[in-house]
Image 1: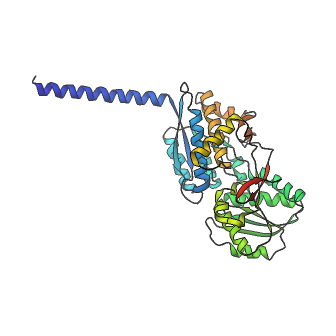
Image 2 (image 1 turned 135 degrees about the vertical axis):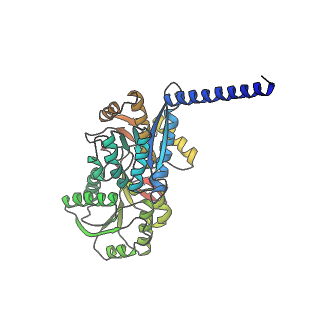
Image 3 (image 1 turned 90 degrees about the horizontal axis):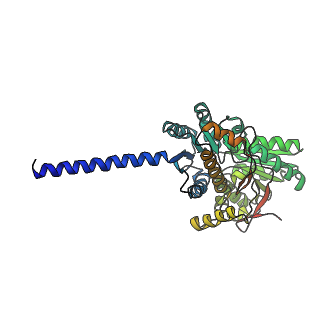
Length: 375
């Protein structure tokens, strides 16, 4: 055997050893890793709020879950729904075909409702840190929601408007989507129970830039207050144009409609907007304080509702998956039996439909461009 052949054989052996070692290492990593699927609107109309802020909270949660090197590492595979139900279906099918058994997301009601039959059929557990539509409540046994249903919030909003503000005539202006229509239906029902008269039923399409026609109708009505439901950018647009039209009425928005874009787009028109948040934040709690400090340091921004809910959702699911050794039925039962889990948004419990139970709501308004608790 000549020298060149010997060198070739040695090189081939070394390459083979390296490849075998790489395959073995990858298999070991996979065996020591839990992969969770994530479906978020990272592009499209809801990207700047529901998608971006949800992803921020999720990534901070992963940092905390993976601090203990003795535990199985948790990773995520993220898919973009682009705020479209059909693409949400494609995304969740792709994740299931990759062998993933746990999914976080949907976020948008229409996307969540489109994904629901698929995860239910495949017995894949879906936990949703968003999607206020009341329809999600009956979407399936394997579906949990960590954002309060619009039906629950509607009772709180109606009680406040009727008993605290003593308002008897309201106008509705809402997004024509599963989310907006769902909020409108439950709010209307609750308002009617309280003896409130609906003066206007106005809606708009996602991404509308001109709401003046609807606002002009509301301005000429005898409504005392306008109830809003839509994406934050749309709400900002409404408030800015209402200010330009000198529409002198109170405005109250659904919590899912609140985000930085309300102020960025609405400007001074957003001042005095009222809304309820379903969270009870204790900044003296070490876990909560750590989240706020790291969030502000990493993103140069203050946390808002959906980043906090996404954080709690990811940490809770990750802990239950580890406790149950990745058994879906065990995780499902563990979530149903959750009692007073201490999240940064408050204590977490689920009802028999998988919806989060929240009793404590806080009234906020906007003052000088900031979200503040009302006095």
